[in-house]
Length: 171
Image (cartoon, rainbow, N blue to C red; front, side, top):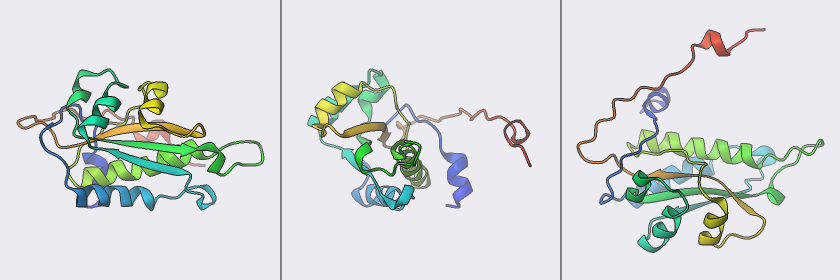
């Protein structure tokens, strides 16, 4: 798939086929896209957790209260450590930017593989941290399901985006 096709194809999927797991080789290609993402000073202050077991899915699902989330076959969790990220002289910490870039790479890779995603930040961070057993210094930045659309579901939604002239200024 051409890069721009993946950008256009990507959307937030909220109807998953719970019985259809994503093959491991596809998950690895998606994760590789995140591994290759740039990070400030190449610190790579991240850790990506792929939740696929029913036991862990139950724990993770309890941290985000949306009915559609109960059907997802995998959850990708982007976590990082502020202490391992690059810090600019004025105190700016690059962790959230680094994780955003990496997760976006993986979401676009998933779109190119025909795998659905939905960027989620509205989870309960305290419950999720406990469920995952994260270190005190680690933070979960975002999560996304990874899975295929529910059989028979045809997503007709179109992204509404502002025109370029509303968001770009040429200087």
